[in-house]
Length: 163
Image (cartoon, rainbow, N blue to C red; front, side, top):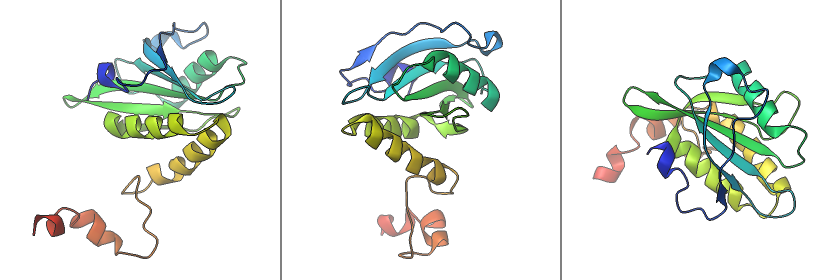
């Protein structure tokens, strides 16, 4: 996956400029922005960087892009790492929005697509809020609540499918 193919089939796609106030040393290159559904919908803004951003730089870029807007914003910053693409994300709301880095760009694309598909900004914010806790687990996107041993899911997730 590359930044150019991120949400490539999504219809609500538009360009966005580097906002005034973005950290100069970040070398932020906007790729595209996407809007969700409803009044004052979620926006997902995708940019590329030359390196993994520090969380405080990413938050400053988020604040500059968000401005005083009422729409929630998920800022996705893609960067190359070990021959592939990783991403850092920030948002969607708050004075000190959450930020996380070192994620697979494909995983972030799935999260963004699911958030944009929510019926309104409130649902999108709730969905993204639930994602933050999962990003810190060994198996993001999987809620293991007593059904399987975590080590089975983590260490043997492909073994039982191969049988």
